[in-house]
Image (cartoon, rainbow, N blue to C red):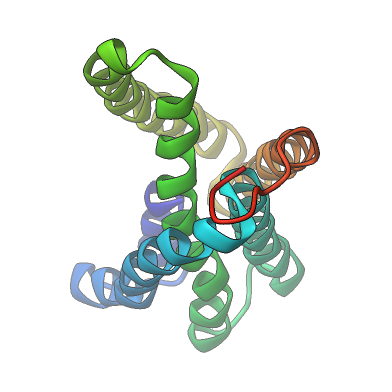
Length: 176
């Protein structure tokens, strides 16, 4: 997302690097807020429910960006970034918890390290794939397709987390 919208802001909307960077401040700030909120919500709602909701919130932001279209004013784009940042931030704690709950405590360090590596690989692949999409289709059409792909992946992820939430009900005084 950051890669795609950096290209979009600079090449399609003719913003300079400073304005482009400032456009991401609300998204980044809400990532931190989402991270903090998710930790508190997991105790009452459960890991999988928070993961499902966070992915759904992020997907709604992508859907709003798609609906806004390529000529959307910067203020509207910033507004659409809010659920994306919040959802992205709220995804990390339950994803990490779900992973660590699934492995033997003796392997928690290796599992956590693998998660970190996979996040980096995912970012690398995202830039490569979405870069190729933008290169092949142009900034506007490429950004729309990249958003549609993100929306699809988030919707699938939210649905899978929802299935897991149904399998793991929240226990009284604990997580599910």
